[in-house]
Image 1 (cartoon, helix red, strand yellow):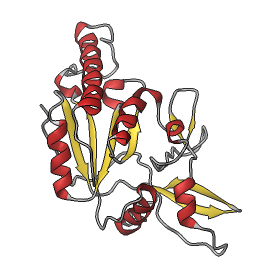
Image 2 (cartoon, one colour; image 1 turned 180 degrees about the vertical axis):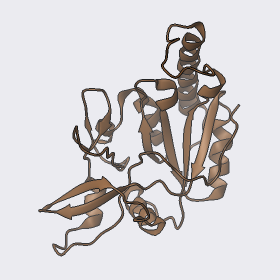
Image 3 (cartoon, one colour; image 1 turned 120 degrees about the vertical axis):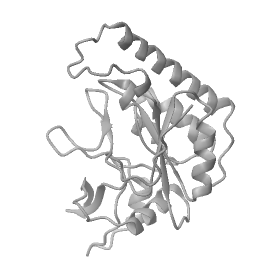
Image 4 (cartoon, one colour; image 1 turned 30 degrees about the horizontal axis):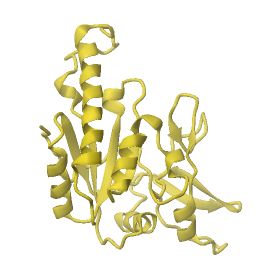
Length: 234
């Protein structure tokens, strides 16, 4: 079962929302939010918006965008699709790369504490699931320059939850006055080696067991989303 749900903890992850700005060009900022689709597939299998050598930037795209699938990494796409089909609002995810059991995650946006409790209680039904809850995840700034929209990491203290929530209401077709973000991942701590800084035991039995447990968790998670979890009406 899940444990250690850290409610309202500060986020340290690269998540994907813009803070609303205005420009002299009078561009339609909300339309740009709805129709933006700037992330692209890199050779290493990651999907994000910046080029090699630039600061890492990954941008939240509306789940209602016609090309939404192109913005989601393939290993996590079945889960994200299952969530969207059930009415949930994913705002961030990763398919896992070097160590997939701790990089693989998805994040769901909701509007009330009751919905937080409802969803965290639901995902407790999937063994070895860990959840954290945040009230702000914005760290990407959308701005207009030289005739087009661009993105950059937010400077410290630059963003506001008011701007973050306003933008998310546009992206997610909601009218929430508040947001909570539930980050869901595999409880890899249960199966990790206590000390392995250089991955020197990559072929070790416990390492292999962790991979097996992770793959089992993913299968159980997808099956639960497709067949058991209630439709979200938030």
